[in-house]
Every structure is written in structure tokens, then in C-alpha cells.
Image (cartoon, rainbow, N blue to C red; front, side, top):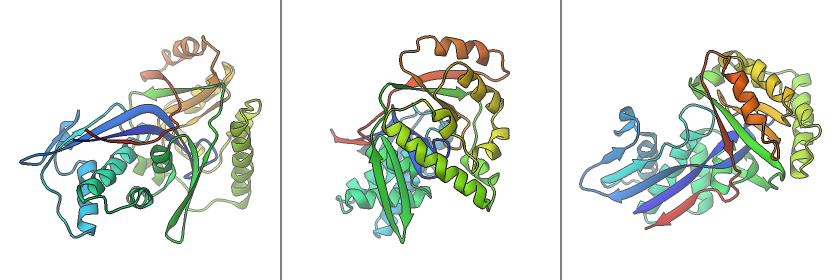
Length: 294
């Protein structure tokens, strides 16, 4: 049996649109076994068929090698909430590429797997952090992918505020502008560089300033009920940073790891809103995807 554990991730981190991501110890776990017929098991009946993203990804990779996958029993984990901005779809793509490579006889290198998953996903932020772990930056250039894994900040707690409504990435991308002004581009570049330096050095004093963004958050905010109000409340309660996780609608909060009252205080506020919000403390994963043959 092949077992693949892929961590959740939060992409963009404010001004790092499509470049930055951070992975967490919250996993989708996938298992693959040879079977007499294709059998896909997940918590969502609509995905228990050939349209499952894991299987579709596997099939695509097999076809590129001129092969067809043998029947498999695939168990698809679902600990990472769907369509909430925590990289659930990316975990399925990554697991699909890894499984395809395994059943093809390991024809691909780790870099080939990484690059193929990014090609299928369409951008490299989530995949990079999920595959290699930790805090990462990445880019695509001339068909190649380049990444840098950075020091994980110390003394910081990551808290996800996860709503009971979903937001499809496709919709969240459709609201973004096709072009941005030079002023906004410089704004994000300057803020992103200073934010990365602060995170690498665990200097949280000015993170609230550095996490400001002009490329995606304000355009997506109307899609997330009470986004600005929740972000402002988190800052009022002493958060270092509060921002949209990936395309949303989850709001990620970086805060003092010694603050034992933050969650209770933000809960009192969230309970006054019309939507139901779940508060989850997440530990940073620095190891990335784990592949086991059992």
C-alpha cells in the first residue's frame, strides 16, 4: 500500500501573491492499493468516481507516459477543509502525481514530480510549501521552477479562522484585475521584502504594516463576509498579522504564542456574526509531504 501525507498550506501571505506559502501540520492522507476495479473512497460522494481530482491527475500523468493506470482502491483524506483557502485541491494534485510516478515504476525525479504538480495546479505557491514544507517562495521561469525555503518564525502562533461557507478559487481569481498600476506593484514589492525579513528574523513589531496588500485582498474581500471587520478585530486583540489565506475564505492570524486569551476573545466576536466560524490553531510543518510504502 502506498500512503501519502500532504500538509495544508496558506498561500500569498498578504503581499506575496502567487509567490509565498506556509505549510501546517494538518494533513490530507491518501492511500493507494491495487484492486480488481477502480474504487475511490472519500467523505464526499460526488468525488467517489473518475472525476476525483486525485485520479484525474494520476490518469493525466499516465497518459503522458503512454500508459493507463491499473485498477486501484484510493482512499482520499479530507482533514483539510475543501474550498477554504488551505490548499486542499493542491494536496490532491500532488498526491496524484506522486502516486502516478510510483505505479509507473518511479520514472520521475523529485523535481519532475514537483514541476509536474505545479504545471497541473497552475501556480507554484501551495505546491512548493506542501512538497518541501515550511515557509517558501517560488517562481516559474522558462519552463523551470525555482524555490527558496526560509527559516520558520519562532515565537509565533498561527490561528485559522475558517467559515462555514466556501469560495471557489476560480471565482476568487475572476475578480482580480488584469493589470495593476506601477504604484501598487511597488507597494507590494516593498511590503513583501520587509515582511519576509521580519518573519525570517522573528521580528513581529511591524508585521501589521508589512502584511498590507494591493494586488488581491481588497478585490476578494467582498466575497468573504465581514472580512475587514474580522481582520481589524484580530489587530485590536493584538495579532501580529491578519490576512486572507490563499484565495479565501479562511482568514489566517499570526499572533503571540504566549497569548492564551486570543481565541476566546475572537470567538466572542465571531459569534456575533451571521456565519459560523471555526477557530483552529495550526502548528507549522517544516517537513513537507511524507511518502510511505507499507
